[in-house]
Image 1 (tube, rainbow, N blue to C red):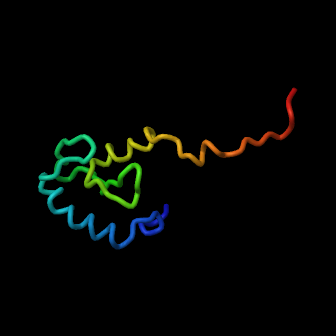
Image 2 (cartoon, helix red, strand yellow):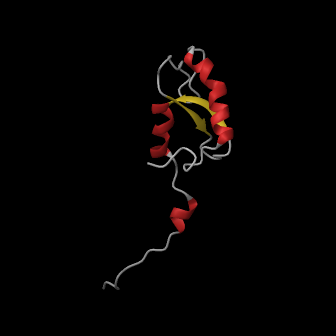
Image 3 (cartoon, helix red, strand yellow):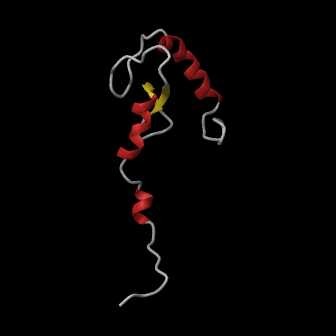
Length: 90
């Protein structure tokens, strides 16, 4: 499994997550996705903006954040990927 740094979570990300951690663990923070409180001890993520991964939307329940992957629109690159065939079919 890749480390958090290998996955793009640098020092700035870790520092920002530590800032949020105290309030989240006290149960004072609502999920940025579903708006329900994140309960103390509940898994949570520092969630990125779906359109711009350089921006954060705030803490989210881990389940809310990770459920977004299946709802993301296909990337423009995926639509442009060439189709390759092993042979021409008639």
